[in-house]
Amino acid sequence: MSLDPYKLRLDFPILSQTMPNGKPLVYLDNGATSQKPISVIQATNDYYAKENANIHRGVYYLSQHATELFERTRIKTSHFFQAQCAKAIIFTRGTTDAINLVAQTYGRANVSEGDEIVLSVQEHHSNLVPWQMLAQEKKAFLKFFPILEDTTYDLSKLNEIITKRTKIVAISQMSNVTGTVHDLSKIIDRARQVGAKVLVDGAQAACHMPIHLVDMDVDFYAFSAHKMLGPTGVGVLFGKEAILEAMPPWLGGGDMIESVELESSTYAALPAKLEAGTPNIAGVIGFSHALDYLQKVGMKNIKDHERMLTEYALDQLHKVGGLTLYGTEDLEKRGGVVSFTMDGIHPHDVGSILDEEGVAIRVGHHCCQPLMKQLQIPGTCRASFYFYNTKEDIDMLVHSIGKVKSIFGRVVRK
Image (cartoon, rainbow, N blue to C red):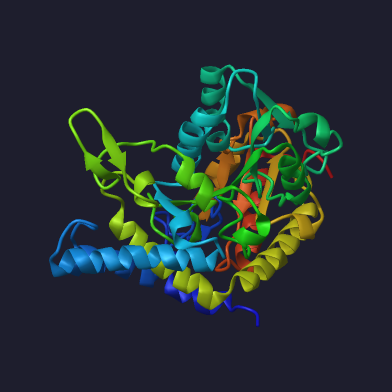
């Protein structure tokens, strides 16, 4: 069953608004954050208006009810992603927070001088900087998978990159720049051979396709709620239960303790051990409704719709002179992201002119400066789609690119 984006758009108030310049909004920056349906907005408002209380602490009704809603979201998340169990779901502030948690807990406890941490050259800074910090502290080595011309991982030297000295492989499932979706099975298999743990940055993939965490056999998987219809400030770290149990806490304080003495403490069981302090309760409850919405639409339907949009966008953009497109042409290996540059025109100029037409895209290095350096460009223009986008949105993108070319007064390449 296919989805109807025109009907679904009615659930997103922001998509019907007009920009201050009188242009209707064409939102094509879903790689940065998705828009929110009214059910998520209402659930967040209802918490503050009707259910506001701290969790895991009170014996009174409001606190117990808020705790129930919060923990129900944890169970729902584990089912949605087919995780090992609810205890394996740790709520964080976002993907960045989740990756830092692993680096500062598992990493600090298990990486030693001379060990290796394996990444790729196209990692988002969130999955690069934490490992740089850990490697500097531990005097470990960083190693990187290169990419092929089509921006898929070059695995020709897999066994040389992942060795017996490798302790952690931290890799993205889908590029936020090119939309390339990577088959991680060979990387995971090689990591298993040498006893290395695998963390997958799923920030871009989790919102666009079905994810089965047990089948993937990853040790850690990190993603954010705000890219999949949920509120900002909520992330999820999945970890295999035995590994999470063995990890020391990262943050100390309330709710993560079992017993506290003046000079020592014992820690609570999972997941509380890794969730110190008062969390974003309203955000987590809102995320529960986001999961309900995605479940109703269907993740396979979302994936299929975005593939159709991507194919249409690539076809239309290939007809435009003076553009360079990045990423694989194989639609089986890419999600709903299209990155391009315009010959002789800086991406910031492109973005500014498109904004005058009501078209919202992302321009710049997209928190992937090493990749930009390898591509020898300052940045790209990125249009990223979600299930509420339509062919008309892409038509408006192409039309606005034509305005950019007319303003700059040239067609650089036919």
